[in-house]
Length: 256
Image 1 (tube, rainbow, N blue to C red):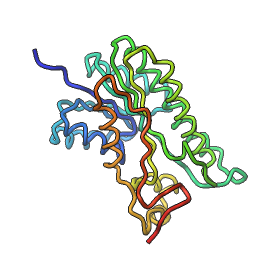
Image 2 (image 1 turned 45 degrees about the vertical axis):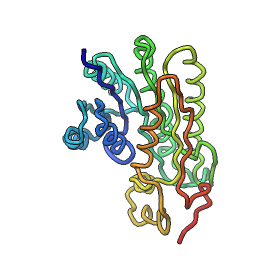
Image 3 (image 1 turned 60 degrees about the vertical axis):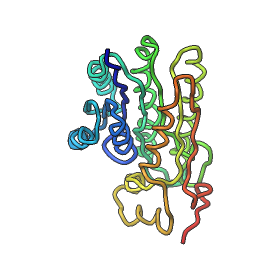
Image 4 (image 1 turned 90 degrees about the vertical axis):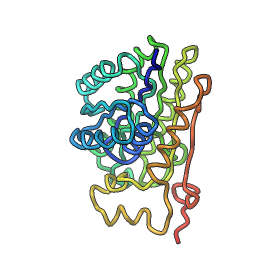
């Protein structure tokens, strides 16, 4: 009898850390399920992943802030995976602006809360019942060093990542006694589209964030996800905090 193929579900999979995580798991022969709002990017990525060695690639549009979208995505995933989901990587998230609270943009705050917190909860809730029923699964949440340290201009983004850390730790307690693993990845400075999104497509401003620094890459974080997921079933990596050597804290960066 052939061994069942492992599968990972990745939200926010169309670029950056999500894309590189998909690449890495494809190289290991996993079935990769991709979810993001930009389905055309996922379809292009799907072809690359198949060439990289993915046993199967499933693509479905996903807006984590929309109940119906999450329901469709979840149903499609369970169908494609034949009831076996080994890992869910809650990667979808964003930061918008660096305004102090007194000058904050409420729509930006709402978008961060809806995506980073409620969106993560919505997707997790959608997948958990069948994970518990099938006695299989691993929830890996994308955190940030902003879940440990706050900084000026990051009040709401930091609050969302503190919430993600609290949710992750609570899930660990709630799922104790089941084989479901729960983990958190907390990166520091990673060079992706993160700053471009934060500064609303101001490429010069985004580029300056990484000026004179050797930041982490999306692949570095994908390696952390892989290490976390690939441990034996009795091992749960609670949390990985990873930063570039040039960064000691959000505000303490060595620039050359």
